[in-house]
Length: 175
Image (cartoon, rainbow, N blue to C red; front, top):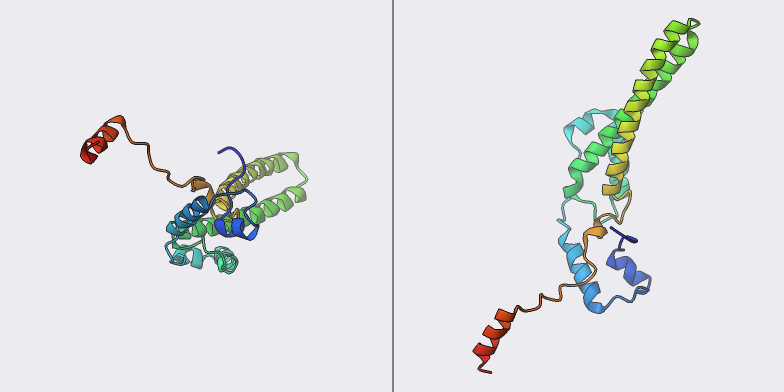
């Protein structure tokens, strides 16, 4: 999508409608924004609750998202997945530190090289997890305008009537 993502209507109104959107456009956007809401809240899944790091991240996100009306029950799976990825990232970081310390303690080059290969694998996995987390952050309003991108700028102006429809309308009206 080209250009800057759209802002929520509440923000547009607070800023004084600098973009000069029409009343119809604002009403349409507001209606579509409300249709995206289900009114349910997201819950913690059992796997997230069982993992202490993921549980802690879930509680942090719940606190952050408390005042944001766009994050709700529809986002539950994504939020829990993000928390589990956060836990995986921390576990990989701890493993990296442990292997690195072990590698530094060895004097023999052959043992250090074997651990170096392990470090490369850990770093590769860390990067994969971080890429997944980054994509989820865009979806979870850790980039808050993501959902607003799907709302069309203009309200439905109606499709122009086809020539056949115009003919039938004229015939009905008797003109």
